[in-house]
Length: 87
Image 1: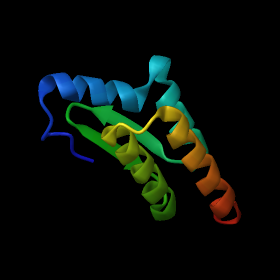
Image 2: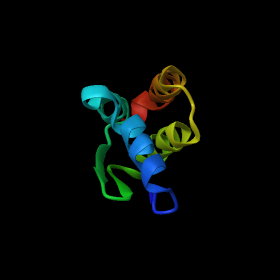
Image 3: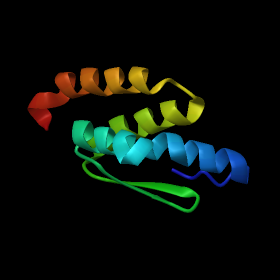
Image 4: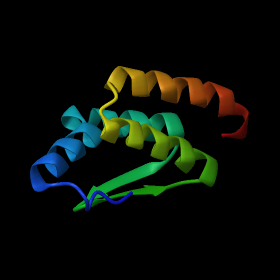
């Protein structure tokens, strides 16, 4: 996911939202989706299976748009329960 279109100040804020305090948000997304996340420079990279990446990408895009973290966590938990047999 490219963040190149953001201004430096906004980029720092968005990266902070994706990573979270002490890496909490990133860890929650990785745990609930099974995807590995790398935030480096102006790029967010995801490694995992296509179905899992789709869910993680949607969650990260929600964070970029400004959705509250609690809403994103609820979304991830719901998706995980729906897709659990596949994971």
